[in-house]
Image 1 (cartoon, rainbow, N blue to C red):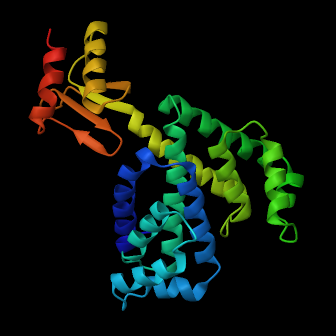
Image 2 (image 1 turned 90 degrees about the vertical axis):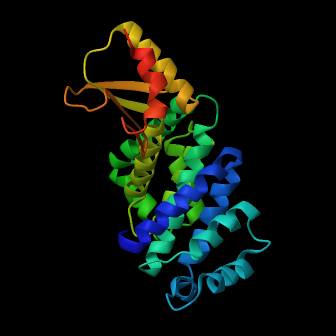
Length: 271
C-alpha cells in the first residue's frame, strides 16, 4: 500500500487510537465481519472506492448497509475509512484488516500488564506459525478449499488450545479469510502488528555519555511520568548528539528541539 492509500490508513489508525481505550473485542470482531462483507462483493468495493464519488455519498452507502448489523463504534470506524481516498479497491479491505487486527491487539494490551500481554500474544501467534509450519499435513488441511470454515477454525485452535481470546480471534480470521495468503503468512502479518504496538512500550534513548545506575533510574522515572506508563529503556551512546538527549517512543520523537518536554529529564540526569 502506497501513496494516497498509505496516507488514508495512517489517518485511520490515528483516529482509531483514542477509541481503543474503551473498546472490547467486539469491535475487532465487527470490523472483521465488515471485511467479510466487503470481500464478498466486488461491486460494493468499487462503489466505496470510486474516486468520482464524494466521501459523504460513499459513507451514506456504507451506513445503509451496516446499520443494525454491527456495533456503532465499528460502523463509525468503517464510515471514516470509506470517506477517505484509496488507490485501489483492494486497499480499502487491506486497511480494514489492519484496523481490525490493531483493535484486537490493543484489547490484549489493555488486559492488565500491557507489555507482558503483548509478549504473550506474540508468543501464542508464533506458536501457531511454528506448529503449522512444521506439518505438511496441517498445512494441507488448513488450505483445503473443500473443508468448511468452521472445521478449519476448530482444527487451528486444536493446534494451540491454550491461547487467549485475542490470539484465537486472529488465528480464526487467518484461517477463515487468508485473503490470498497462507494462514501462517497472515498470522505473521498480525505478529508484525503486535511488534509495532510493542514499540509503544520501549523508549529508545540516545545520550552523549554513559549514564550511571542512579541516572538511569531517574531517567526511567521521568519517562514513565512523561508517558504515563512503565516503559522499557534502551540507552544508546551518541557523542555527536545535539542537545544531550533524544527519546523515541513508538512513532514519537522527542529531541532537543522539544525543550519544554525534556527539561525535567535533563534535570533528573544532572550529576
